[in-house]
Image (cartoon, rainbow, N blue to C red):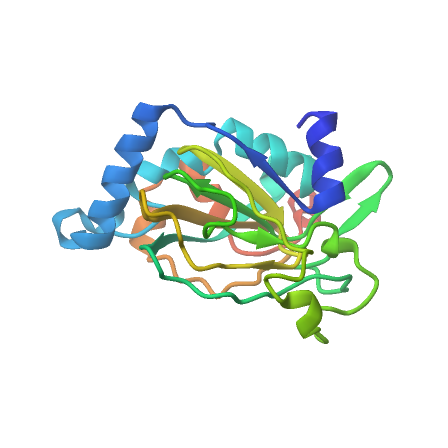
Length: 245
């Protein structure tokens, strides 16, 4: 992770990495994801749910891991993947729903900077498989809110959360781009308003091996058929100090 990206992530709570995947990679993945969504029975059981099938190779994509090693833990064995799901929205679908933001002691949401490095708790990695136009339905953020001193998580203010408050920003990006953000930053879904294509995005929640936020929902058959190097991202929560005993 470049120093530029570290500073932007620390400053805003999120970064956008455009066109990480090549056009052909995007098309192959998109075709599979839509088949998984619309015709799951046409696939073998271990490919009917994410992260199974064509998506699996992206679990530890170099750009993803480069960022996670900088913001969760420098030891890749201490990074786990909590959940993976498809976000599909046609024109007019979706709703404004601000959440998170502000300092917290909850390890899943906490954002800290200590001894020259970031500790971001849960970190969302979003693969955008179609073009996203700024302020047309992509995920929205209040930049810097992951370090806010006022409790805007439990005590939200309508004047801050209003879409037209002037505090929110979004992004534009081509297909195959990455959006990576700390769960601590206040963020919101939005109504999809791009008339050219639906939103097809894959949301991944990475966390430290010490903690878990989501209840496990991925069928065991999906994980069992992953490559060993990918299975390890779904190990049960524990403290790595016991590996030394």
